[in-house]
Length: 375
Image (cartoon, rainbow, N blue to C red; front, side, top):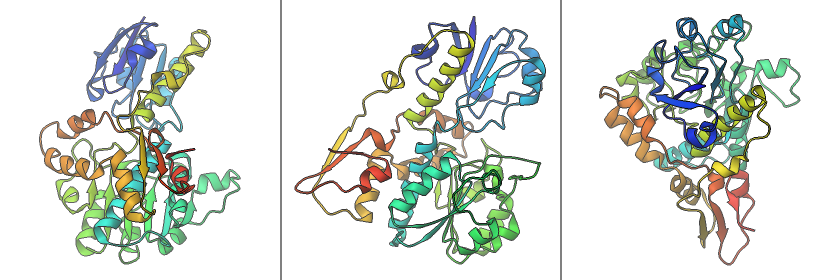
């Protein structure tokens, strides 16, 4: 049996090596030629599992994407062939929530403003949106949830319309899947009219899919509205985002909001569980067996907790400033976008760090934000 996989998927040998021969390629380079004799295909979001690729894979028996989203997979074509497939819902929710929190704390420190009391509109209240909302509430922010599909499905949480969310928000954070048609399309959900109508000094965060925000319109609005602040991890035209938009973005990163060590391992492990069930292999090894120990595993603090301290600790786990600088240096170089994604291998999640205080009880805030609180 042959497994073809994205080379950026960690621990492939440890998780899948006992099942088959593994052939690894850059995600964007996986095409018809690479999958001709593949039995299993394991990808992330940059591989287009389209009709041409599926037609070429004559022996394909399973496709897995170690990501929440699956808009890069032609599900109808797989189902027409009777090929089982799976995504990994929730695998990177904590990583995305922590990315947004770290970015907000970093931008707030640059601008010398407090996040407490600000209104955050979370557009898309699924796994990543909920993880973001929890952390924002822990910081004392007011959170508005907007998710018409979940609201229609009977989710008991309180929701507001998109128009109401955008009208009230100091910060807007996008967490929706990319849907081009149907009852709830999200392609260019934030178009020029909605972007123009944002309150003065609004911050816009996009950590879902680049096409959810009309990038041409965003650039035009930003040029007219320098008061708007942008935190963008995803871009239209990846891996070649608009250079002019990158230049006016306050924090810019190369689609790595969900790229923690734990998130990528968790995505792989979730696919392993599905595959083991498909092949009737019995239970798989516990997820924790695949997670390495963090370089900095504990931290003891002696100063009172404030926003500045939270920002410093968050950036100790994930240095988003350095990521932003590297992105600006590399993104105009050929292959720079994907090189930086590949180099982003060692970011850990907050839970890998145990936080305690000398001389005082550690506040619940640390665990609410996702850190491992010292007992």
